[in-house]
Every structure is written in C-alpha cells, then in structure tokens.
Image (cartoon, rainbow, N blue to C red; front, side, top):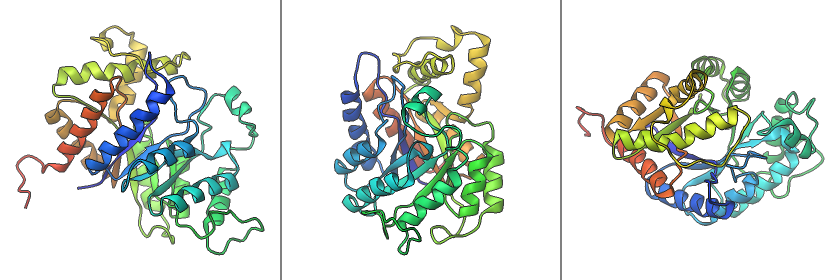
Length: 335
C-alpha cells in the first residue's frame, strides 16, 4: 500500500474568511494525522480571493505546531517569487523548530498573475529561466559544506527534503537530473502526466537524497456516503475552477445541484480534462477509481486534494479516502 497525503490550499469559502480557513486547515491536519496520512502540504498562491495560504511558511509553522507526527511542508513554494537564501532561512527555521517533519516542494510557476508577480518585486523576464540555478543555490545553503560565502542561519547542514513540483516535462527533467523526488500536479493539469512520469523515471540519476525515482501524483478525491452527495459536493470545486479559468477567481462557492448540466460545452470539456485524475463518489466508487489510477500510473504516493465547501463534509471526504485506501482490494486476503 502506497502512502497518501493531503494537499490543502486553505480555501476561503463564500461567507467565511481567512481566519476560519486557518482553523479549518489545522483541524484537517489533526484529523489527517489520526487517519495515517503521511504529509500535509500547503501551496503558495497570491492574489486569489479563495486561497489563504499565501504566506506558506508561516502557515506551515502554525500547522506543525498544532500536530505531532505528520510531515508538514510546501507543495509548493514558488521559487521565482523569492531569493533562495530567504527560503533556506525560512525552512531552516521550520526544520529547527520541528525536526524531521518539514518538506520543501519547489515550483517554477509564479503562482499568480503578472500584476501580482510584479508586486512581489521579482524579475519576471528571468525568474523562471533561473529556476534550476536557484534550486542548486538553495540546496547548497542546506549542505554541510556550502560553497557560497553567505550562510543560511538557520539552514546550513539541516536535512530538509527538497522536491521538484511540476505540470510539464521541464520539472521531470530537472528532478531526474538532480536526483530529487518529483511531484506532478495531475490534480489540475494532467495532460502530460504519463509522459512526465516516464521521462523522470528513465533519466533519473541517484543522489545523496534519493537512490531511486520517487513519484508523487496530485489526485482529486471528493468522497461522500453516496455517489449523489459526492457529485453535489464536487460542484464547489468545479465552479471555482471554471471561475478561475474564465478570469473570475472567486471564493469557494457553495455546492449546487446538477452543475455539470448547467454549463456549456467549453466549460464541460475543461472540467472533463481536469477531472480525468479524480475520484468522485461513494466509498465503493472511490476505492475502485483510486486503485485504478494507482495501477495505471505506478505512483509511489498520492497527494490528495479535496476542495469541498462544508468543512465537516471535507473531513468526511478525507476520512473515506483514508479508509478505502487502507482496506485490502476486494477479493484479496489481507494476510
């Protein structure tokens, strides 16, 4: 049985606020710890009204302080927005506070629109192109014998596992070349998933951090006690995604009945692509869909996203996912 983990964007639901989102995130992490999820990752996004995890390192510290064993990390930090030294210091601080529990996933995208990226004071023309060099610089800050004159304090000599995140072949190539674990964003950009996995595995070079390829795949799970309720709950995420891609980013909307039958063919085609890496339904339905996805991809770990409006229903979705994943496949002896 492969590990499963939680991806949380700390969603802000309509009628709510960031403070409540942070309380919900910590509550979800505590439940996830009890349900044997391996990791709880938060993602950096800026300028979006429905996502509260912009100050990602700060929120990681909040979640790690409120839990005891689950690994907590970034899925990810958008490195073009930051100097590598600042990230080394932030995650060196987190690792010093919560030793052996911090992960650092790095992404190449800015996680924002161009206007927001400019407000972050980064050089838009070169930041993405400098991503490989920035990753190497960051890794050097964490090494026991850094080559740079500047030291990350805290940071130097600390074991902070670094992951490369991506939704294209670029990240797969970089992760393989550096011998780092690779997390693919198949939960919202699945088009190149199979090709990226194959490229990463075939070109992987062992490193001090990792001796063989390790692939984590983003996967949507929207589970409920019945298929009908799950489809209803899933409509919040579907609405939010259509709004975002239509240039109308919103807070997480409440669910509506028959949403897929209310939208046009273009919106339906968009969602069909996104939901190609999703399990939506009852425990029985989710168990089949999750196992089929694992068998098809050979994933080493799943990072589960579940954007559900009602917090209690979101907890129930993650509880179902953990329960069906822990159960032996139908017809097999658990030994």
